[in-house]
Amino acid sequence: MTKWLLPREKVLRDPVHNYIHIRNQIILELIDTPEFQRLRRIKQLGTASFTFPGAEHTRFTHSLGVYEITRQICDNFVTNYPSRNHGQDGLWDDNERLVALCAALLHDVGHGAYSHTFEHIFHTNHEAITQQIITDPHTNINRILRQVASDFPQKVASVINHTYPNKQVIQIISSQIDADRMDYLLRDAYNTGTNYGLFDLTRILRVMRPYANGIAFNANGMHAVEDYIISRFQMYQQVYFHPVSRGMEAILTHLLQRAQYLYHHCGFQQQPTLLIPFFEGNFTLTDYLKLDDNVLNSYFVIWQNHPDKILRDLAQRFLNRQPLKSVRFTQYTQKLIPHLQALICQAGWDADYYTAINTSYDLPYDTYNPNNTKAQIEIMLPDETLEELSAVSELVAAISNKKIGDQRFFFPKAMLGRHLTPDDPHYALTQTFRKYLLNDALIDPKII
Ligand code: ZN
Image (cartoon, rainbow, N blue to C red; front, side, top):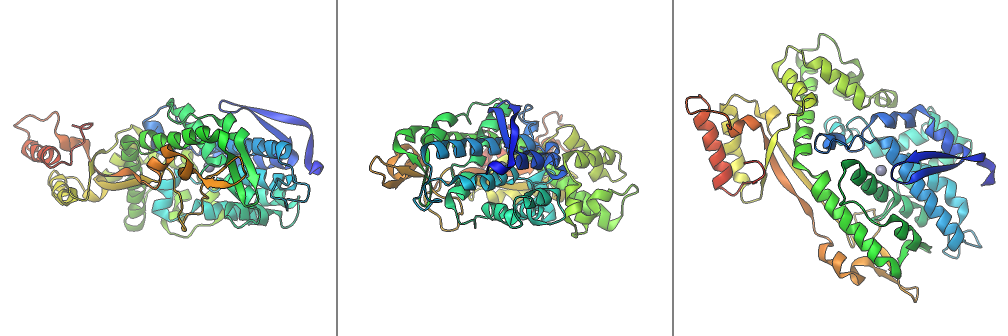
């Protein structure tokens, strides 16, 4: 692999890893492609910056971070666990380094504008598009990967879709403790200004090791691995599932749905040209790569003056951070939702655009699930036998296979009637609305 080495190492400064070290010409050329540079214009956490104002970081810096962690793992493996026979002995074959580094760098390249929200509405799929960008002969990324070998793009794509024959490479990029998760937890914690996501990366990388069927962690580093699982658990509860970010996501979803409705029913005076292929459900890779968060935001600025009252109002709410409020509900209290919706309609709101239900759940650690492509975490005991993490850690066992998260009903803040006086025509209605929230255990003390 000395063929593609740069004459001198390049470094990029990074707040999480200090330096991103680039030693390979192929990596440098991939970073400089328009497809990869586009990730600078896609925020890593979408609407979370409305809750945590520092969270403006992008898919670009996260992708570089995943590359850097993978590079450090390869360095550790080749120093401490080098294979003498191309990996037949279950140790690390450093010929796998370039495919691992390219897959790490490119694992999120198919993410689109306001990723998850956009995907949900227009049925795009960032994982499929990542593979398409890598394997389509017309992309710059494919052209650069082909310099290595004609089948190299396919190899990189197969790491991302979990079919690559070397399990060590797959698990470095995608398992329950992989370079992707480790980077986003640290980066999201840093940029949100929260401490929940912090864990000892240096220690984890030190105790990580290859074995015949993947990667494992030496038993003396188990507490660092436990700490990582707890960090992830906390980040989901405190950051990723934050109700305000979800209230803004509901506005964004309805805004795009209203625009699609108007396109099909009344049209736009000034056509949102770049969105039309998505409104029509017939888009090409070129159409997809033209979009980013900034393009969408520009349309939202224009739509603030649109003649349609709902589109105009939702655009203003999104740009000026006016989230829908929410209340948690359970299987016992969900029967109240139709009553709340009826009151919202009586107050003159269109329930399709001003209410929403959002369910957000995550498994902090999954011991075994045949449908999950993410491998469980293996601890290597001193006699070199393997034990699955929750079998040796009581702490992890306590949260294993437990879904965390909640279901929420979203509604306009005005329904709380906070500033209404008894002579207001909606006063009685908002009082009834509040009573439902208070009396029937739908209550979330945060909003009342
Ligand atoms: Zn990622």
